[in-house]
Length: 280
Ligand code: PMM
Image (cartoon, rainbow, N blue to C red; front, side, top):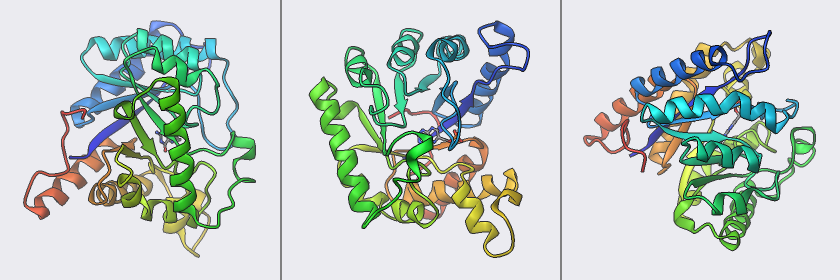
């Protein structure tokens, strides 16, 4: 039963740096809408981790995300906090988040694993090879899947050493992080092997550039592939991730992935994949 994690980006309006209810309100409403569409988890983030994005001060990040985390958790949602900062992770768990989603796998902030260990939260460990500025320079692999598995294994071991048992760990191949074009497809083809490590696996392809590159082909620049086509492509990857045994998919367009998962499980003849209400 593959879960859908809906993406809730908290970006302040241009007149404010966040922290006011007026800034939180649209994000909360968006999150509740995603939950109604079938998201089992809402992933709240206040710092873009996209290639080239600038780092945000943790205090500013917290002003943005904490009111949203608090409101969504109070409404009964399972909330994850998308952050690379230990202080933000701790504050978000205090505000009701049950999962810490760290795309850097605990590498960006040396305090992260110990911080999460001090809570009861689960942690997503993403495969990562350094911050935005460096990650493409490090996107060199002899064998993508073998290296991603080995490096994630090291992060799981580091988490265990910090006091986080494997039962609280979710691993993520980090699509788009330190991987380009075909390397992302190779990593996705390895989803079954990643699942074989025995941890829950989360896959995040939503709207990413490599999807647009595949759709554009030789016909034109990936930038011209619009959101609607990227969302349709994402829904296909949700089904393929489910078939490979993924525990969850992280998406912007929850309804499209929910529908795709429902149809795929109907084809299978059992309600194996789509599970809008369960978090585990
Ligand atoms: N990708 C982004 C942000 N957070 N978290 C996880 N666990 N996995 C991902 O692949 C992932 C993530 C970047 O994408 P966005 O800026 O479109 O949210």
